Image (cartoon, rainbow, N blue to C red; front, side):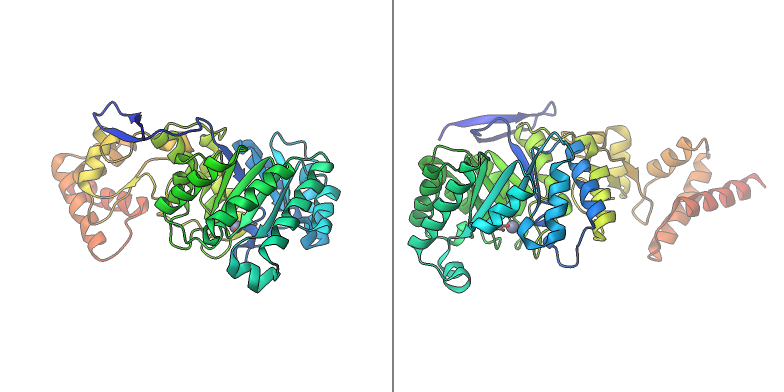
Length: 398
Ligand code: KIV
Ligand code: ZN
């Protein structure tokens, strides 16, 4: 395979990778559907509308607004989101069942996402249909959606545990029936980046319509697997904010998008400066706290405690940050955090920024007390620092 350079830093670091077939990737956000399947999460009607508006502001291409057949309230919410006049497409989820598709139509969606289990394990234990029956149901559903003139996204649920020849057969049948995009879900998150890339490449070779990928995070590989699928030709990634979703969640929107933009040099329509603000809206509405170490949007994503790191970023932020992703790009802020690892440069910078100019002796005394507090396992807050500084500068002055 031809190797092409996709990322060239001014810092002399050059990464090489395989050529990426699509230069722009579509972002399909399923925070309101798969994200709401996070155990314990249920968004109110008003919050769903607010989330949809925020996702539209963020610039997603498609919002999966819900599963209209699941309840009257769900259908109403999808309908109201469809009528918000958003720039993005509003999509509804449906099994390959007429009643589900009708519920999507009643909700005025702009796209129907229809799905059916294709793996033997799910076919035999859940829907109890033969392989042939599944193909027939898929074809009938896609044709029904297309007869209503709507774009149709077709998903082969549990694709990564489905016999590959059979999976291709299902996809080809759905494509021939008129499906506009074919989705490869890693429903229980068992793919590895290598297997996801191989499977996507196989599907890409055999179909003509664009491919989507929907990865779950059971082994923490959802983002890597989504990117691997993009490398092999996926045009659309299905993601959620804050990695919400069934069990360990779905591929994270912020991580996938920033990797695509900054590492792969691939474009999306996401206005990345709204990422942190969007993550915080979802945190508030879902009640699921964002881990401080969550990449891109977590509180620590651009925080530095160690003396060596803080000194480095004070001089030049690229020393201990990726550089190709800055806090400004994602609506975040760089922070110097104090603790037992703190060095003199960080303390000096924080105090200087507040208009305080300790002498060298004062600075050493302040640092000693900051470290002593950190050594006790205490978090050193700004209040602690100013109290220490006042005490030290006062003491030195007396
Ligand atoms: O994980 C999954 O397979 C799904 C489908 C509905 C696409 O969420
Ligand atoms: Zn899912």
